[in-house]
Amino acid sequence: MMDYGPLLNPRAAAVPPSGIRKFFDLVSEMPEAISLGVGEPDFVTPWGIRTAAIDSLTDGLTQYTSNWGRVELRRLIAQYMGARFGVNYSPTDEILVTIGASEGIDLALRALVQPGAEVLIPEPAYVSYAPGVVFAGGTPVAIPTRAEDEFRLTPAALRAALSPHVKALILPYPNNPTGAMLRPQDAQALADVLRGTDVLVIADEIYAELTYGGYTHTCFASLPDMWQRTVTLNGFSKAFAMTGWRVGYACGPREILALMCKIHQYTIMCASTQGQIAAEAALRAGLEDGFADVRAMVASYDRRRRLMVTAFRGMGLDCFEPLGAFYVFPSIGRTGLTAQAFCEGLLRAEQVACVPGDAFGASGQGHIRCCYATALDKLQEALRRIRRYVEGLEGTR
Image (cartoon, rainbow, N blue to C red; front, side, top):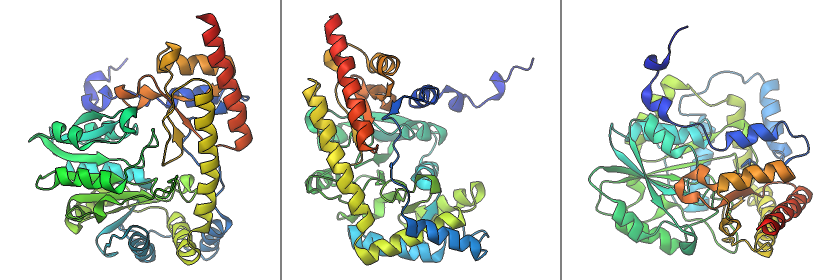
């Protein structure tokens, strides 16, 4: 039998599998289970968006597009970014359409990270960031964030992590998994630390539309002196309920975007034509009606958000109030269990799937991530089961 070990890329082989997948696989074998693990809207893509894609097929628009993406989509993205976030990009060479924001992360890292360079990642963090840095040949450096700071990256923590080896900072707000977000003064304070350095910023702003409590997202590139050092990533999956369409985009200085497009050109070619046309319909309708569908979804998420926070606190579990995305990140420390043990026990005993906090980095230990982009009746039933499980743990102590 052939030994493949010596033939495989050791950097890739050393990266562990995603800590989320194990729970998804187990849930697939439990028909009665309720999953709070998948970060996916429970809404169906609005009909007008679907119709645009269907019509494009009927019209025979099934060819490749430009590597950069359809001109009309890039024009609409430029209009959207200017109207919603006050930041201007040329649709010609400062916007690249990608296969979701996930490809944008990969492209940005491969374009910016030199072998051995360090990339700062606030933790807890989306599971793809650190592996993406490794695949690009760099070294991920975690900056732990704390519930006491509302899981925001602080200027002091950023300043302490800087070194001559640091090439880039991933700035993931609103945040997955914590639901944290940066207020304007928080973002400005981080910009003040970066000003005068050579550190580039990869701003993953996929949850920019999903904010609550009267807060709105501040696009990092809109801050003074930050446009030229920032690659902004966004997409249609979360706010427009278009996860399966896999359409995202990257915006930034043309010199960086040109290199990202070159990598994209040789590995992907272009995003799906039908997905791009659907994305055009989403932006066109939103710019005309003030993003009514998005606002309706956000209002629904907000009700569920408040339900989740109240329920976890009612169980005696500390729960930071998330102000963005669609996750809660309660502490299960008082149960005495690790995050992995808590989630495995909950799944076995009550058939509710949550994600262990340490799947998002060591600083997530003692927490679990629960997605509230799930139907209200399922959320209520899941919370009843979680309460029963927590009360059962207390009865055994």
